[in-house]
Length: 223
Image (cartoon, rainbow, N blue to C red):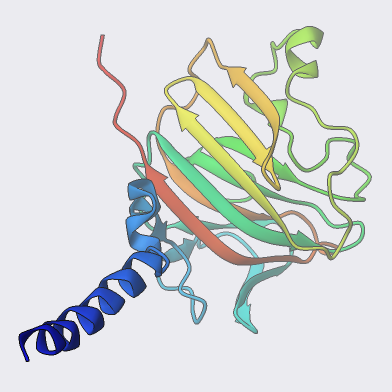
């Protein structure tokens, strides 16, 4: 009677082990770097964000997204010492609308100092989504500007897209929907740390942002 008893014990145990091996690996165990993202927008309110008292832009949360309307202004992250990072948003912009994904920005009214990853599908400004707006350095040569500018929008108006900024020291990479659009080194190292911000450009623009996440990278070494 020993063999039937062993079979009764071993076979169910073997079945459990094989089932466990066949089960998919939990997402948390796939890639360690997936655990490093910090959610900047909770989908409910503007906790963690602030506006400059002199700005006139209107910011609300509607149907799980930050919505910017009205006059020029910016919605800033409360934290203002972001240095090196991977900053990602999911956004959409209306027809003829204009916005921007600011990083290493100074807290200020209207159009603050800082880098801007452009958000623009059909606005009259020829600089479209995926560009690093060249205003941070008026002395850029035409060749340098050409490396920063996207002239044809990689998405349609009112269409959700993902834009990512990877800033590590003076090296800036921008991606739209996973495709690299800018890979640039700012030799002047114009801005080294600051706030994130979403731009409301003008009364004809309506910008939506439904996701905003950051993965901070190690600080730059001091020379």
